[in-house]
Amino acid sequence: MRLTQGTFSFLPDLTDDEIRAQIQYCLDKGWAVSVEFTDDPHPRNTYWEMWGLPMFDLADAAGVLAEVVACREAFPERYVRVMAYDNSLGRQTVALSFLVQRPTEEPGFRLERSEGPDRRQRYDLRPYALDRPAGERYGSAARS
Image (cartoon, rainbow, N blue to C red; front, side, top):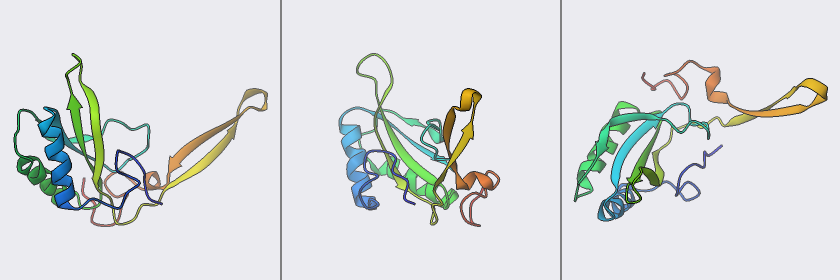
């Protein structure tokens, strides 16, 4: 199953040149950019681990791309995304978010049904990856 989260998730994976172009677009808009990673990509898990600090006042995408590459090397079997934050409205909002790396195997989600009071049915999504402990959810190369 291919996880579809973020702006370009329905497209084929972006090349480094395409990633650089998107990062440059964000920087040209004056947005702060950060790199994040996780091994729990549930749609409601919006708080991923940050790779370093958000990068403000940059003019060239090369610095952000270097951080993306470093994060990929440190966590080769995790999801990695780039987030761009816009503060032009007086508050920090996510203006753009896209995946720049996926694990080699994406096991997907299962639908779990449970019965509640008065025979009400409740449905939950549970990632198959959560059957394994954190840090070992995607392939044998994943690191904590």
